Image 1 (cartoon, rainbow, N blue to C red):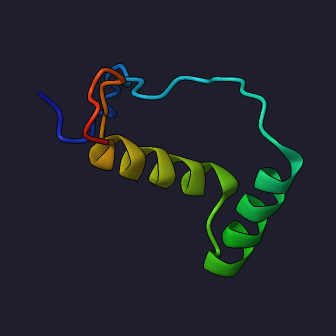
Image 2 (cartoon, rainbow, N blue to C red):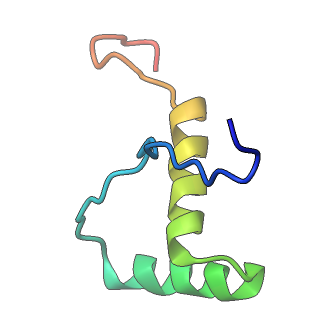
Length: 66
């Protein structure tokens, strides 16, 4: 085997493209955060979604103690 070989392996695609509708004010707030943090809007949204999924609390509507 030659040490000068250029080896290419298939890339594992871990992302998907989604389309969502959000309120204009939410989009403006995301843009503001993106600009302040020097990150893309996509990065901010991914960070927010990851945080929400890790910290979500489900409350059963039949629970009368809430």
